[in-house]
Amino acid sequence: MTKIVWSEAMSVGVPPLDSDHRIIIDLIGRLDDHGADLSEAINTLIAYTEYHFFREERVMAECGYPELEAHRQEHGTLADDVMALQRRYADGDDSVTAYALQQFLTEWLYHHILLEDMAYKPYAEHCARAHDAAKAFGKFRLEDLHPELVRDAETECA
Image (cartoon, rainbow, N blue to C red; front, side, top):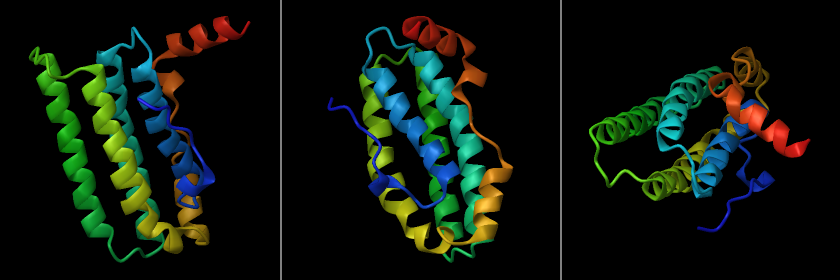
């Protein structure tokens, strides 16, 4: 699969949300690596969806995004899909592979983030309350979930 690289064209105009979206790109890249831990990737995705969707919905509420409820429903569907994927993996379904998860995330990136999320950009980009709401959640930190990944990266860079 071709490596996906973040560009400003992907920005929704709210830096903390852009940072969250980069996590999906990072997960896609990790799944390209041989030896990627699929269980770890799925668990990270579950934590990410809970955190990010709540933050993003708060941002949309603060900027008065008129399609918030429809967007919230799409988040619910995506969260259900992630949980179903996790259940299938836990049940030993061999169709849940790193490649399948990578395909799922790539579709999510292109459809949800680069299409659906761009619809709220004009509302949120210049709305101070939306930016404040996004900042209030702090930062989703992969290293808080998996400190060993940070240690491994630090060792490789030393």
